[in-house]
Image (cartoon, rainbow, N blue to C red; front, top):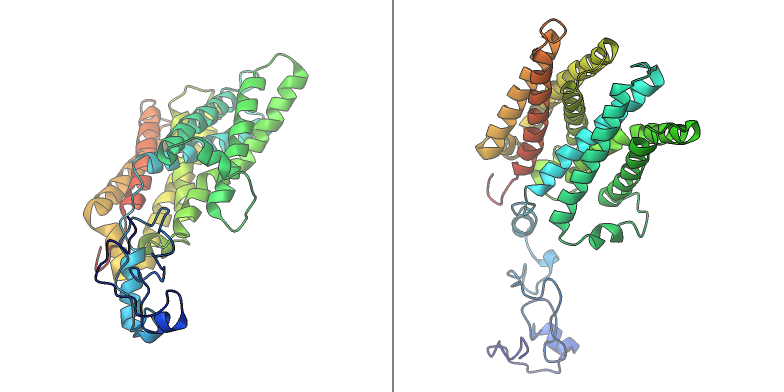
Length: 351
C-alpha cells in the first residue's frame, strides 16, 4: 500500500508532477514534494513523519526569520542518541594516545636504562587502550565493516574520516611497537622503536580529534565550545595517560618524568575547563548545559577528581602511597570529563 493510499484526504486535480499541481500544492505526499502515485518513499527517513511546512508553499523564503529559526532549532537540537560506549571510547582512546606520547618521549630521553619500564608500559597501555577502544567503537557502530568503510577515502574536511585514519595508523603503530620493541633482534627492535615514535606522534591527534568531532556537530553545547573541547580532551587524556603509568612501579627518573607530566596535564585540564566555562558565559543556554543537571554534576565531579589527582601527584615524591592514588583519581577524572561533555546538550526551548 502506498502512502497516497494511506492519505485519502489528498485530492489530485492536476496531472501529478505538473507545474499546475506544484502551484496548487498538490504534492500527493506529506510535504516532501514526492508524488506517491508514481514512487514509494523509502530509505532511512521514509518512516519519519514530515514536520509542518514553513511558509505558504513550504519554502523557507516565505516564512519569517523567527519561524525559520524555531523550525531549524527543533530539527537540529535533539538529545544525543550516542550510548555510553562513545564517551568510554573517547576516554580510553585518549589515555592510549597520551601513554604512547609519554613512551616516545621516554625513549628519546633514554630513561629507564636497559629495562625501559616507562617505554614498554606506555606501549602496552597504548595497544590495550586501542584494542578496548576499537571494541567500544564497533559496539556503537553495530557492524565492524562500518569502520572500514570510513577508510575508503581520505577527506581532510571530515573530523570523523581523519579520526578513523588516525585510529587505524595509531593502532597499527602501537601493535608493532609493543610486539617488536621487546625483541632480542636488534633490527626488529629498531623497527619497533620507529613504530613507537610514530605512535607517539599520532598520540596527540588520537587524544584530541574526538573534541574536534563533537565541535563539528549541530549540537549548540558542543558547537559553541568547539575552540575548547579539543584542548580539554588533550589535557584530560594526558592526565589519564599519566594516571595509568602512575599505577606501575618504575625507576626514580621514570617516576619523576611521569610525575612532572601528570602535574602539567592536570593543571592544564583544570585551567582549560575554567576558561571554557568563562567563555560560554555569554551564551546562557550553553553555559547552563554544562553547569546544570546531570552534566553539571559530572563536570563538577570531574574537576574535583582532577584536582585531587593534581594534589596527590604534587606530594607523591615524598608520600609513596600518593602515587597510585593520583593515578586512580586522574583516570576517573578523565572518564568523568568525557561523560560530562557528552551529557551537556541543549534541547529545543532550553537545556
